[in-house]
Image 1 (cartoon, one colour):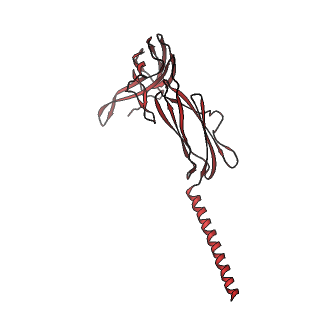
Image 2 (image 1 turned 120 degrees about the vertical axis):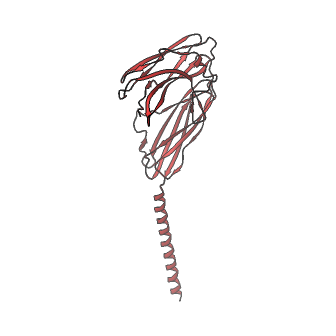
Image 3 (image 1 turned 30 degrees about the vertical axis):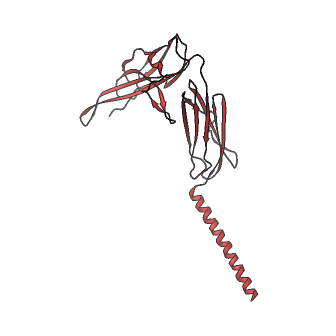
Amino acid sequence: MDTNSLTVMPMSQEISLTPGETYTGSITVANPSSSAGNLPYKASISPYGVTGTKYNVDMLSENSHTEMVNWLTVHSASGTLAPNDKVDISFTIKVPNDAAPGGQYAAIKIRKEDPTTTDNGVNIGNIYEVASIIYANVIGEVVRDGKVTNQTIPSFITTPEFTSTATIENHGTTHEDAMVSFIITNAFNGGTIYPYDKSDTGINEVIMPDTTRELSYTFKDMPAVGPINVTQTIEYNDQTYTHTQTIFICPIWFMIVVAVLIASLLSLIIFHIKKSRRRKNKSSL
């Protein structure tokens, strides 16, 4: 079964919109060079949003932050691409004069239909979709109201990996960027474990308006045993939130070894105590 599909660039873009004006932009759709043949495509528009703290993508629901769907028009929305070929698809956003300031979100979806695939002699109409997300902000008086409400790092783990979590709220009228960074060092010698190189400046996360997002990051290949110091820093809504935690890494095998050593030491102490008492008893006789 051929699963070669189209790619779209950029996967997302941030733009500013002015009420009463028309914005013009574009995305690029490409057929990978490894594709087995020509790929037909068709562009469509959908609202973009998220649900739940894990940010499950929602491209069906409409609300006050997805009105841009009605302002957006895609031009040259269909065609066919040969392998290693690409095309720029332009779009325009005609912003109403009375557009409310704040965030507006939509997705330009690119669909590839392949009706020629067969499975056990039966034709199957496979559909593959990719999307380019538009994060727009209508210029005007927007409300920026958000904060980090929780940062959690474990203090004790039995395997050389751990997960850090953070909860961020956005009660404003537009999306906000949260920059998350980590510093992990060996508590004994101060050696840097993470970041691996200076080019790693952090992770940028988008926090949508009227949502709460739970972020989760897992770090592997930590030292097999011993303490490490972890500092998580979040820059969000012009505030910096820092949480530092010392994690003790104590694998099961190490605990067993320590328990055996302690048991052996206690047995040796008890043996010497009993032996000493026997000697005293003999001397008293």
